[in-house]
Image 1: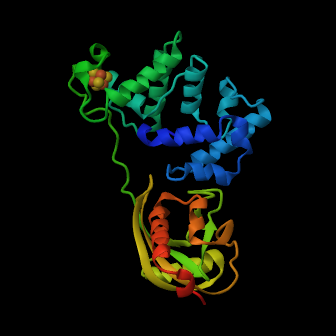
Image 2: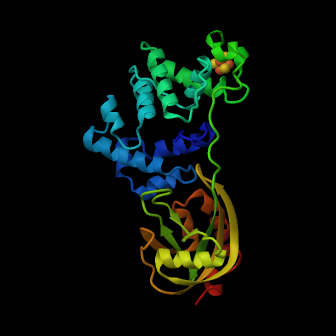
Amino acid sequence: MLQQTQVQTVIPYYHRFIKTFPSFKALANASEHAVLKLWEGLGYYSRARNLHKLAKKVCELHEENLPSNYEELISLPGIGRYTAGAILSIAFDKPFPLLDGNVQRVFARLYAIDDNLREPQTIQKLWTLSEELLDRQSPGDYNQALMELGATICIPKNPKCLICPIQRYCKAFATGQQNILPVKSKAKPIPHYHIGAGVIWKKGEILISQRPSKGLLGGLWEFAGGKQETGESITDCVQREIKEELGISVKVQSEIATVDHAYTHFKITLHAHECKYISGTPKTIGCQDWKWIKPHELRDYAFPSANQPIIEKILKDSLSQDKSVFFHS
Ligand code: SF4
């Protein structure tokens, strides 16, 4: 949960998750829908799907306990070198190194390494350092202390060198480079897409579709739609996307919400339009499932964060007017 997400955001999710799934068995037996619903709003849903798959593997192959050797751990879904190192050192007190963004920064400053952190060779160099410096007597405490130092003292901007416990060993501090290091080349500019989405009404019900389980936001429910093409109006985009995804025809009506949302590698502006169902039976062309549901049932499904303001608007509007009459065809 903590990958790419701050501790404060994670805490309530963590407690709810552990309460609902107190064991690997409980998680393995849950439906993907239940897992995604608990993860709703936390983002990076592949983490939830991997955790779910991992729980199934742990039950199937390891008698419901997480294995304590590197090869078995690294073969489980969602576990890479960093996570394996963190589990082995912190949970099993085994001498395995780790390297997260915080630790990379600490090492780059401690040894005044001015190589670009975006280069794989630099990261390999830092892994070697992490291995060499590891405290083999207390690897769990050591690794946690290192990550904590990076998160609280050796922070990205204006590190707190005056209270740093390793200041006397630090080459960046000694040479006044603590605000220059580490070196990280600029990331490519993030693309910005406009997405048209349709809230399709028929006789008081709304059509929702489920994204394919693989890929971004896999398995989550959404209002059908997609990327606006060059020269295309948003209403044409909504109409086309719905036809391509579900094979039905709709009449695109007024915009009900505009939502800006940022993902790791791109940003979107989501334009949600109300649509009146015209003809055709929905098919799973660009989605894995679809459903007609009542507005109050929207809360029972896991939607991406960018869809939440649209859901709020629908629920608010459905309290103030009877859509079943307005959109009855
Ligand atoms: Fe980081 Fe400053 Fe400590 Fe060096 S002395 S490790 S730059 S906080």
